Length: 322
Image 1 (cartoon, rainbow, N blue to C red):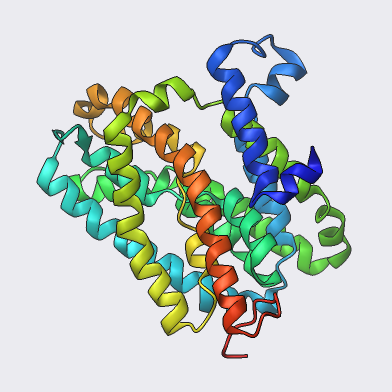
Image 2 (cartoon, one colour):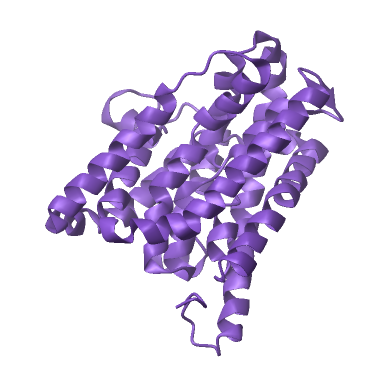
């Protein structure tokens, strides 16, 4: 099984996710029996696993290289956040609490704000540079419901809950501090990333119902097309043309995360008029999670192959600036 998963882009995350999603679709309460079984297999431990990945990946980040991470992934992420704010405000002003062809501003905002840090980590592990993994913690900030809540709250003039941001930052800072004070601690945690990826994939799949995702139909396709059309051009142009790198990081950031399925309900706490939209929005986002989890690894593999060919077929991703 492991050999098969490693043959696929981000396979250690995606294969368990799809198996778990299939089980959840056919027997959603199979593992809801309490105790350790439910904690391990029902998906209830996803938040803990993400926190552990934030901590472990941050512990491997040499504080001397943080500047390099911010120079590359930091710039790309900042651009992504700006794009999310611009299109989020446009969507809210145009649609409000309504829909167009079944698409709501809520669905658009959550989708474009979403980023799958686990898929990113798996893809840059296969096709990127070693230091690219240091951006995992930063991506955790973007992938949480905090960003769409922030955008919606600012657009509507509501209150903003900053604790969602703080809760992501604490494991990151702890990891950086411990890993730099004691490099042996960073080495201790590094091998755990592999099994954490498998468990995270399983946990994310436990929250996906494949039938509900298929019900999204054409609206799900529209969300996916809009997601890629809005994000890929500016992010890819920035990394390839301005930062003179491969484009792997930019494309690896363009996928909808399973944890984003919880974001619509969180945003609806700011505006109860959104409650009737939740069912359709979650179905559309479930569709986007599945499709982008398939398409994004293909795109990353393709651009890596193109970049490798440009560099003389060495198979190594080395920035042009170096």
